[in-house]
Image (cartoon, rainbow, N blue to C red):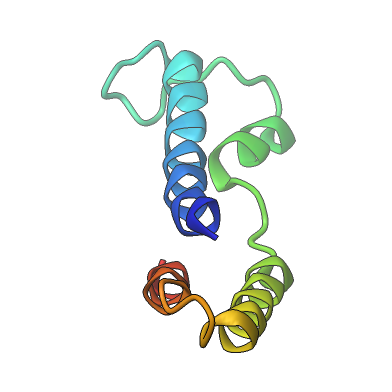
Length: 89
């Protein structure tokens, strides 16, 4: 569960940095927002809009963490703060 509490931060960082890097490579790391190497609107939109946010993955993780913490938390009280940290992120 400790890995579960760290992975949302890692995924958030990767989800932020990878599109920024791709956009920077597209416009040559300039500040001009209208400069692009894309030749079609479809490719431009695919690069600058990003991926869809799928809520069902986060929802299933929350249910799983809650179940494990409530099931085994009385035997291992350390699970409660780890579960709280996981649910906050």
